[in-house]
Image (cartoon, rainbow, N blue to C red):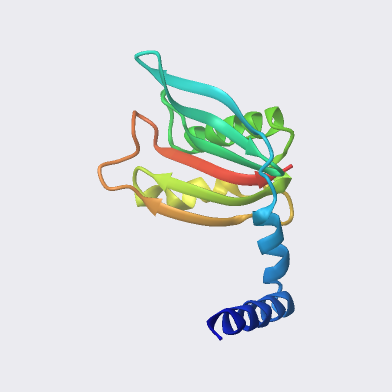
Length: 152
């Protein structure tokens, strides 16, 4: 009886999942994962710490990029966006294929100036974005740090 009920519940869930589009997601998740590729691995005491970007299947995950030289928020934002673009191109993607960006500001008062440089950099269909001011500031001397997720 329990086995029958479980089987019935599994079939019911499968049919409902298929109707709402979860079937495709489940089948993709069940397939063996594509080979993971990493680029620009940072080390600490010769031990891998993090990768500049990781490519898995059709997705590219780019680590946070900052600019640790002189300049105002406009200069820092421009340089950070250029670094993101370099990583994306290396992985076979582009700024137009970015789906999600996280922006970390040293000072929330830089929000407007950062937006002035940011606008239009991802094409006519910009990605979703989260912007926060980081308590204690962005690591290093950067005024802004950004990371992103894109497709290939």
